[in-house]
Image (cartoon, rainbow, N blue to C red; front, side):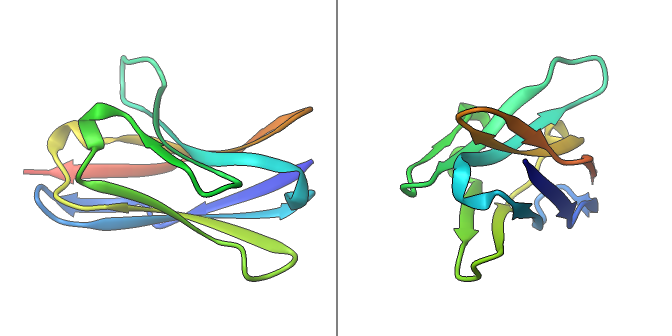
Length: 118
């Protein structure tokens, strides 16, 4: 299994920037992909961004050009994924969940609140 710890959420003004971090530990070498989902009040959970073990990235259309997912796997025991959020909009307000997908399991973070104010 993989344990995920998220950080970096908070309150940001529209047009501003925020960076989320997700540190993975445990069976990190089994991870095929990591990324972020988000869930806004009254809405379904939405996949925001993904990065594979090969470095391929993918984004939902609504964040393309504004959000960037990246990774740091320089350490052997901790694998960190970042979500750089630029030019944030009110509709980016949600709880953001980090996930790590392996062949036999998917692990989830506890969620971090991002609130964009006008």
